[in-house]
Length: 173
Image (cartoon, rainbow, N blue to C red):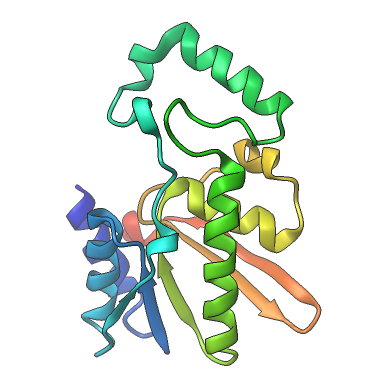
């Protein structure tokens, strides 16, 4: 299903003028970026700082298996404004401290034009919060789906959220 979604996204964005494509080095994001790049004659530029949050001991564990330990973690996380680290992993603040500078480097390099960034859930919602000046504990209020499109317009007066989690291309609309 993920490959089909990436292909749909690539087809939907094929008419858009894109000046650069960046991706996390992780396979799903990289495959999605390649699906977009295939329509634009552009090479995907891998940005390691766009990788997903390091989940540590929770990596690969289904949410249903976490039960009460996840509830306790989420309570501590909310109280700590995103500074609580996943056991053996990263905190939301850690991800923001690596992903946001990567976005700033991309913006500085491409002041004009449209840039596609393929990443992951936590990185995406963290970037949106940072761009809009929202506290990082607001990420739980933002929802995006796989292969969705969120558009930030970085202008002279700061960032404007143009689109959040658009999936019309996945429904054929």
